[in-house]
Length: 113
Image 1 (cartoon, helix red, strand yellow):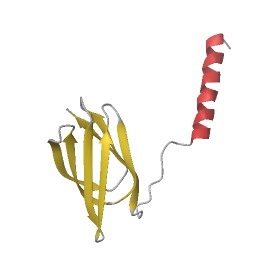
Image 2 (cartoon, rainbow, N blue to C red; image 1 turned 90 degrees about the vertical axis):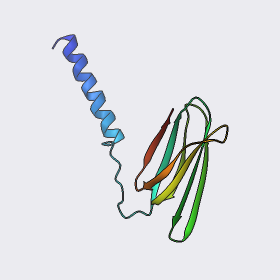
Image 3 (tube, rainbow, N blue to C red; image 1 turned 180 degrees about the vertical axis):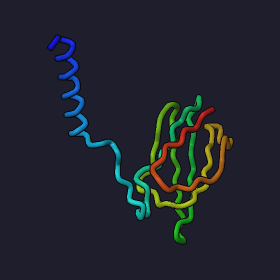
């Protein structure tokens, strides 16, 4: 066995060991869960933004406000599943984007310029 073959064999063993420790990488999602573990926004704008989320889930109003610095990410956790309206505000308080989103699974929304 050449040095290259030994190196490949050792590398393969290390990768397989890491995969065994880490798991298969897929997280089981409970389809009956009433919340999502995390709902995140990534800011790719040239300035700080504010994201406002509002939803009415089972007669309860849910309000979240996230202030996200440039090139950063912020999340809300254990968010009840449902339809939310969102509004992205620039640092000048002008509305950049607004709409509705159905929250049904973990999500990362990227806000681009």
